[in-house]
Length: 299
Image (cartoon, rainbow, N blue to C red):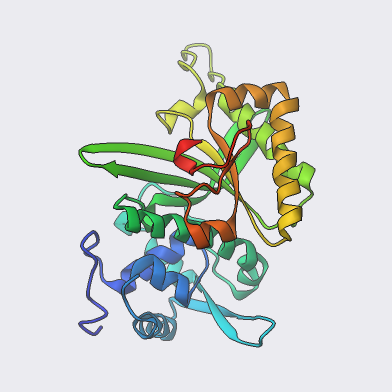
């Protein structure tokens, strides 16, 4: 690998090729541009393309070709089975459940939603760099599943870890992120709030008579405080997206379980394009419990 390809960010000493493999294992699918912004925001597209093409020649990654209305072609990259096998022991992925996409067919089915989730991550990452906060590629964990009882589970599109750095003070924040491309009904989207309210209250039952009941809700096994819940909406007109946000607010107002969650946990919704154009730290988040738009950190 060239010396340019081996250049590293101050926070990560891994060669870029290793970072690309880890990034695709973590985020499932990403375009060349997204990988550059994720891993080398100050680097060139040519550098990222060289690394990806070399990995493809070695059989570790493959891509599906996206074509937009202007007939421009974009490569959406994913791991091959051999690439997924290589990433199992990477230090940055230890302790994480791998859900890699390792075929072009699977990639074509999941690409639109997965790329929208990556777009949301990159908006937060760009904000963090601008503000001097901490949020990198490994602080965004996609497809996190938790039991909510009765054999059911909730799967968050992502769990975000973000550290606000203000002078000598560090404020660690976490969020469940749901990215909605307007492909499901507004009612089904709002039902996700009921699932998060169930997770908030769920206490795992002990197995066997000798085991002690857990002290408090099951989510305490993973989080010191319950993560805030952020809905990121896209792929529809502004009027339609505002109606969907209104339906989320109605669920908070009308469902007692969700209302209880809202009293304890910050809940907000925003339009993805607003995050990309203005940044998540701006007044683009609608509090689902009511109130004026504000930054996500102030919900």
